[in-house]
Image 1 (cartoon, rainbow, N blue to C red):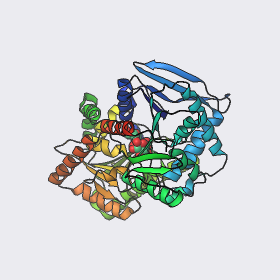
Image 2: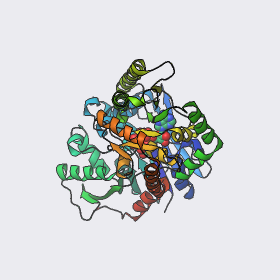
Image 3: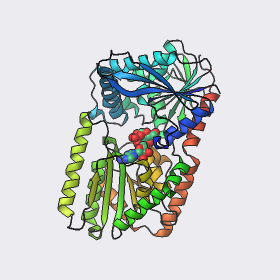
Image 4: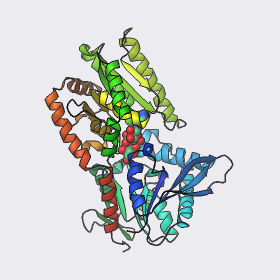
Amino acid sequence: MGRLVVVSNRIADPRKAAAGGLAVALGEALRSTGGLWFGWSGNIKAEGTPGEGELHVRQAGTVTLATVDLCQEDHDGFYLGYSNGVLWPVFHYRLDLANFDTGLVNAYRRVNQMFARKLMSLLKPDDVIWIHDYQLIPLGAELRAMGCSNRIGFFLHIPLPPAQIMSALPQHAWLVRSLFAYDLVGFQSEADVSHFAAYLQQEVPVETPAPGLYKAFGRTLRAGAFPIGIDVNEFQDLANAREGLDMAQRMREEYARRRLLLGIDRLDYSKGLPHRVRAFRQLLANYPENRNSATLIQVASPSRETVDAYADIRQELEHLCGAINGDYGELDWMPVRYIHRTVARHRLPGLYRAAHVGLVTPLRDGMNLVAKEYVVAQDPEDPGVLVLSRFAGAAEQLKEALMVNPYDEHGTAEVIQQALQMPLAERIDRHQNLIKQISVYDVHWWQHRFLEALSETKSTLV
Ligand code: ADQ
């Protein structure tokens, strides 16, 4: 394989462990080919010109990091406006939250064109390019328009909605057509792949010459499911490091008389946080033996706070948590501890390990890595129970979790009760099956599998 070029909206220095499993896995692939990682610098220039950003190139060991600044107008239109105000809600099935202001797509297109121009100046003829996520869907097509004939793959980290929802997006035809600039498109789950195939059947004259191949707009595209995993070894090491064990011990002592339920999320409406908190309230109402005992720790990290829908969810969640504490709390027991913060990565495993129940109940999620992290951090001899939404991509793989429909708050409360009462033998059994699945399909498997599929893909001009 030639040099690997990874393009993602945000980049990380792959040498820093704090960057997380994805950065480590991509870093590993980049290092082995002396690769290039390209993306937004994270800088917003108040005075810049739209569609023009300064390019910065630096070395991180054998990997080259290339980043571009955005001006305020581009950041607001491309990132907050179209990516997070239109694509994020629509792809999470929330047409009601999308802002279809027609001007926003211009900024999205302009920034993708600018990224394509800057990237073109850095490319070599045999580079293999791997583009990530919804902010950059048209980047491949922009590169092709500038004459790029390299092999290009694209991975969508978020769900692809059913055709009926996708086709409500005013720019759906343009976006899907631009996917055909790629040689390989990867989705998180088989459900996403089937939505893609159904959309093509409905909206495009498409031929399917072989399973996983789609021929339209003069090109043949390969598409498939490549469920992302975590770096299991890295996470287990963190869990077994002194700080991880100390954290678990401290939490256990603090909550010695309680049963701990844990939610760790970005504060995002897709994560189903109000539904989760209401289900917890039902648990206390319907199963009074949990009062003065079951404690929900919900950590929600600040996210996209300038987008209105995010401010709304924050307010709703704070209100709900306050109400439950007011109604059920005792002088020596707070039912909900809600923390609006990001937990340092090295403290996460200890927190997961101390929790009897991990609550991962998004209304919709591409994959959800918290579910996998929770399982890996458990003590195999006394593991906690994962309660998982059937609407997370992870549900296709983690069949031994207790599944819930997060919209059914009564049903979710029942399943949480089942989790709290699960006998040790069943917990061990389920945990063993889950950990096997997560260990085989880890983030290294994902990275290898995608790049292998991309390198097998023939040049597809037809
Ligand atoms: P996210 O929506 O960000 O990612 P998720 O996969 O759940 O969702 O989490 C990513 C990482 O963030 C995890 O490693 C987790 O530990 C960390 N994290 C989340 N909340 C945190 C908090 N409060 N404090 C500290 N760390 C926190 C998108 C898609 C997902 C998909 C991933 C990867 O939305 O569906 O799984 O990309 O493809």
